[in-house]
Image (cartoon, rainbow, N blue to C red; front, side):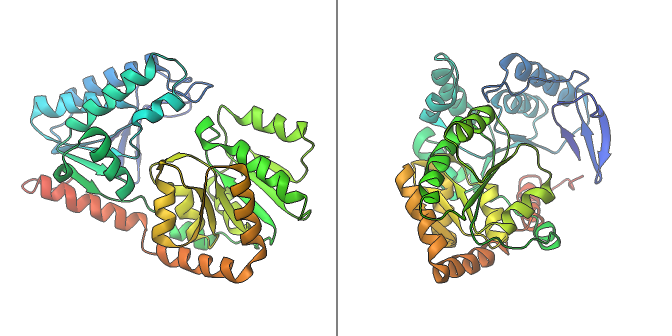
Length: 354
C-alpha cells in the first residue's frame, strides 16, 4: 500500500516505511500549505496536485485509489489517474460545505468556485465514503449525489491510547480541543465561561489547539481580565487525551462539523459534551445518537446554561458519561479499517489488496 501526502516540514522524509505502508511526499516543502487565515494556499495545493497526478501515473498498477475530499484538487488528480488506468476511485467526504464556503473562504471569488468544484467532486468517485449519516444526507440534498454511490463509514477512536493515559477528573474543569478557526466560534465559549465564573469562581477553562484565531482569543481573554483560562497551542496525542480525561465537560461551539473526532474522543474519555445545534454541524446528530451530551442553540447564553446545568447536575453528568463510553466502545480504528477493507474488496474482488 502506498500513501501520498504533502511534505510540510524539512525534517519529513520524501519516502519512508511506516507500519508497513510506503509513504511518499514531494521534494518541495509546503511551509504555507495552510495560510494564517486557516485557508489553503491555492498555489501550493495545485503544485501538490500536479505531483500527485504525475507520481500516481508513473507508479505501480494499483487496484484502487482512495482520496480525501479536502483539498479538492488532489482528489481530482486521483480521478484523472483512475480513469486513465481504469481502476476504482473512492473519495472520503468528511464534510459537505456548500454555502458554508461563504463563512470560511477569505476572498469573495472563492465560495462560488468552491461550490462548483465540490459539486463536481461528488460526480467523480465510484463510491463516496461519508464519515457520518449527517454528511451523507448533505451530499444528497445539497449536491444531488446518487445515494447508491455513498457508503457511510464513521471515524474511530484510539481506545488503547485512551485507556493507557491516566488522569484525575477535575470537578470544575471545562475543555475545548480543536483548530482555532472562525467557524469553531471559540469566542462564544470564552464569553459563556465569563458568565459562568460569576456564579462558580472555581471553574477553569482549557483551550487546546492552534489556528488563525489563536492570538485573537489569547489576547481577548487577557483583555477582559478573565482568569483561569489556559491555552495549549501545541499538544501531543497523549496530552490531548489527558486534557479530555481530566475535564468535567468538553464544549464544542463549532457551527460546522462533518462528525467530530474530538467529540468521539471525549465520549471514550467519559467526558460529557456540549455542542451547538446548527444546520452544518454533524456533531449535533452524533450527540443525539449517543445521548452523551447536550445540544444547545448557537448563542453565548445557551452555552452558559448548558455548562451550568452539567456542572451542577451530577446525576445527569453521570448518565451522559456512561452513555458516551458505551457508544464509543465499538468505534475502534480497527473496525473502521475493517469496513474500508470490506468495501475495497467488493469493488475489486479479483485482485488482493496490497
